[in-house]
Structure formats: structure tokens, C-alpha cells
Image 1 (tube, chains in turn green, blue):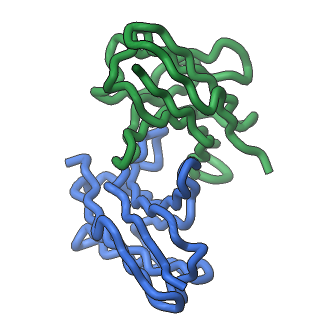
Image 2 (cartoon, rainbow over the protein chains, first blue to last red):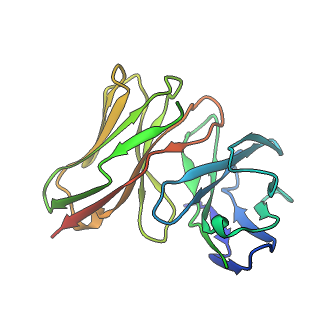
Image 3 (cartoon, rainbow over the protein chains, first blue to last red):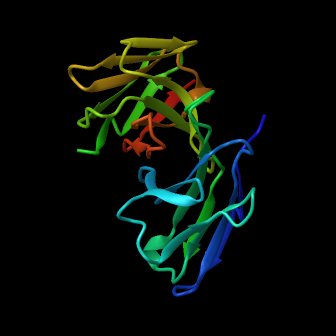
Length: 115
Length: 113
């Protein structure tokens, strides 16, 4: 069964450093998403991406965040200057639309720890 | 108006019992209501979903009840098993676009053997 993959599984970085989180969505999917989950809290939407551009972003997704689909398979989230409060699980998701399913498939996540 | 409120925060049931988790929303534009199951260290996985044109959907031991007028929906897990112990999130979205999922706060379910 196809699945969303994410690398690395765990990233430790120092405050102020840049990090790139990588995702490989399911191959025939058209919509791509990033969500984050701070430990013990709910999953929060960051950004959606369709047709090579951002289709929607949340108030969390400020200028320090960017997304890119550099080739036909990868989807990346860059945090330019990490802050302590960026420590969280980051989930990539993808969706095939409009058919055959509207389900967003989530990857296993990258745990980002900012020290 | 975008919020989805979920209760209870945690739930403990005995094996074989019924687990019930409730959610409420405000945005009447929401038209797709999935439930996700999350095990520790894993990403959320779709469990079951409903659209507002039906009041109930059942898949195996899992049932969603939907009350459009009250803007509420709930997940019922029949014959709960220890393997069902996980965190459950309700969510909502406007399905016709590529819209975001808005998640509830989550319910940590523990099923005792």
C-alpha cells in the first residue's frame, strides 16, 4: 500500500539554525500539506500546496517558513531561523482530489527538537 | 468559528465496553468530518469519516453519529479492545477544495483488559 514517507525521523538543531524537513507524498496525489503537533496538543494546520504554489496557510506559517516541491517526488518544509517554540512533531500529508478518495494520508512525522 | 471542540480529554473503559467521544463545530461550511486514530510516535491515520447528508455511518465496531442541526458528531467504539488504546482526533474540513483539516483537541482512550 502506498504511503507518505518523511525524513529525518528526528532532527535536533540549535536555536537560530535552518532546518529542512523532507516528505515524499503518495505518487499520484495532487494536494500536499504540512501540520505540526506540539507535544500533548492537537494537530495544527500549517500550509497546503497545490499546482506548485501555496493554496492556503495558517497564521503559524509566517515568513520563517517556506515550502517547496523541488522535483516530482519531494515536498519540503524549511524553517529559516528556528526558535525554541518550533519544537514539535511535523507531519506531512497528501491527498488525491477529487477522486477516488478525499482522505488526507499522513506520514509518520519528524520530531524537531530545538535547543 | 474555525474551531472544533472535543470531549472528553481522556477516557478509560473496560474491555468490551462502549467508548464515546464527542465533537462540536461552529463553521457551517464544513462538509466532511473524519476521525483519526493516533498511536504514540505515529502519524494520524483515518479511522472513519462522514458527510452531513447522513446521520450515521458504521464500519465494523466504529460508528459516527452526526447531528447537523446541533453541529455535533460523535464516535462510538463498540466492544472496545485494549488494542484500541490510542489518541482519537475528530476533524472537519470543506471537502470541495483542498482545504485544511481542523482538528479537535484529542481524546486519549485507554481500554483496560
